[in-house]
Each structure stands twice: as structure tokens, then as C-alpha cells.
Image (cartoon, rainbow over all chains, first blue to last red; front, top):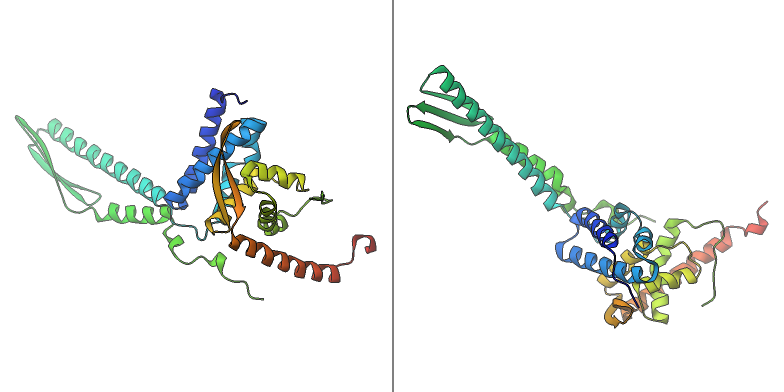
Amino acid sequence: MTSPLSLADRWNRFWYLESVELRLDAMPGRRRRAVLAELRANLDVAATEVGMPAALADLGRPADLVRQYQDAEPQVRPRWNHGALAASLLFGAWLYATLFYTMGMLDALGSAGAPQATGSFLGTRVAAVVRSGEISAEFSGIPWGPLVVAVVVFVLASRVWNLLPSRRQSPVPA
Amino acid sequence: MDRLTVPGGRDPQLLKGVLPMLVLALLAEEESYGYQLVTRLQASGLHDVATGTVYPVLTRLEREGRLSSRLVASDAGPARKYYRPTPDGHRLMAEARQAWEALAAVVTHTVPAPKEIA
């Protein structure tokens, strides 16, 4: 006879599995989902015998468990999700800064009474116009600087070098 | 199976090397689900072996085709995934056992038994 899991047990299980999933990003998606499903099933089985707190404690810290799974993988893969997230955050920051710069230009034009002005912000040319009945901004140019930085951040956060053959699997000479 | 205890603690790296062989041996004796296998390993003398050490080994052996599995419904909770060795698994176990015996022979021949150490 089993009793249903308490809310605290469900929350602790959810939190543990989320922590594992975040760190298992380097594992191929299908295998990662299979491992998590199996882990969840094993946790539920163990919880019926020793309770969820003991079942979770026996698994150890999520980081240690993930290390064991990764050690058992043929090769660690790049973490594309991490790379995409980091590059997206950078893109969002650049977009926000460019809009902030443009709003500042428009505000300055309004205060100075000048009808138009042009400026440049991180490689993007901004032409701002403030006339009676018209407030507009035009963007042109390719922001090469932010693009290069975004690519570098994507490469670093993804650990693209994991595509290269792993040195840890090299045979050890006798 | 005879109960085996290891005095003075255990080197985790040593355990890591022999755990797949032990897992295959116990599953060859009787198919088990993950948590049951951990309790069987503990009953065999590996008292401090944890689920977090055994589950990745099961996952790896299954991925490599050394283990097959089947889901069995249970009245006492969620369905259990039972594992058993495939022919490849039996072959790996035999090879691992041979390698272990060869290594153990070298250790026995080279390292004096504890009672002989001054």
C-alpha cells in the first residue's frame, strides 16, 4: 500500500530534477529526456520504500549525479541551450541600450528645438527627427561589433570545442 | 550470495572500475529494478553504494546494449523497470571477470598480505 506524495515531496522532486536537467544540457535531447524520466521513476519507486527525502539524499547532489552521467557518456556535447540563452540576453541588452540611446536623442532634440540629428551607437546609425506632428527615428548600418561579441559569447557559453574529439577518451599507453 | 565486507573503507575509483561487473553479475543471477539492485549490492557487502552511483551505470550499460529492460506494473507503486544482461552483457561480464582475476593475481603476487606488513 502506498500513500500519495505530499506537496513538499513533489516540490523537492521537481526541484531536484530541474537542477539535474539544467546541468544535463550537454546530453542529446532524447537521451536527456529518457534519463530524467527514468530518474523520476526510480525516485518514485525508492520513495515508496524509504520516503522521498531519503531517496533524494541517496542520489547525492545534482551536480555530482550529473557528473556521473556525463562520465558515462561517449562524449560531452556542446551546450547549445546555454549558448543561445547567453547570446539572446546579449542581444536584448544591445536592443535596450540602442532604444535608450534613441530616446535620449529624441528628448535632446525636443529640448533644444532642433528638427533633426544623426548619431551612431555601437555601429548602428540613428537618424532622429522631431517636427510638429512627427517624432521618428531611422536605423541603418550593420552593428558588426555587437554581432561579433554575440558570436563569441555563443561559442564560449555553448562550449563549442566539445565538438572536437575528447582527449579524455584517448587510450592510455601501456 | 556470500556476504562480503571491505574493511577500512573503499576507494571510489576502485568501486567505479568493478561496479559494472558486479551489476551484470547480480542481474544475471536475478533480474531487478534499479532501487532493488542497489539494495542487493548493499546486501552483498557494498553497504555504502548509493543510488546516484548505480543508476548512471545502468543507463550506460543499457545504452551500450549490455542490458535489456522491461516495464512491470506494481501494486505497491509506480511501474518498475527490470533489467537483465543481454548476450553482450554476459560477454562483458566474463571479460571483466578475467581481467579482474589477472589483475588480482598480480596484486596478490606483488603486494604482501596485511598480516605480513610490519
